[in-house]
Amino acid sequence: MNTKNYLPLFLFSFCLLFSSFSTPHQIDIWEDLEVFHQAIALTFHPAEDGDFKPIRNDSDELLEAAKRLSETKLPAYFEKKENAALKEEVLKNIKMLLEQSEELHNLAQNKNTTDTTLFTSLKKLHDTYHHIEVLNKKSRQK
Image (cartoon, rainbow, N blue to C red):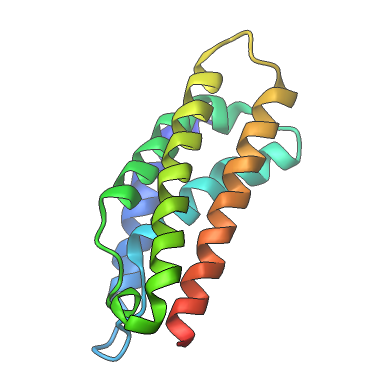
């Protein structure tokens, strides 16, 4: 199955569903981070099971989600004075996430890249994403 055909539809549906349940009180939802989460989930989890077709075929979708995240305005809670250090760290990690996504995309497009090398790069990107999630959670709680 070529997930590339379904990824944009899935991401659009996810955002539509996500936004339909939001209320004025849910200002702490970072939609672009959720979009990246869905994109990496569709590539990382199959790779964990030894299926590298999604990452080889859809690395451009993951890169686009990283670019979108890097261009987004951070949620308002990052602007709180007590979140200044977290804001700086999250911005640094988003830049790293974009660089890692570009590197992963280049590796995925190279037919000579081994699955092991590809998974190492994908895992590093996945770890960076999770670190951003932790920073986001900490910032929301302050």
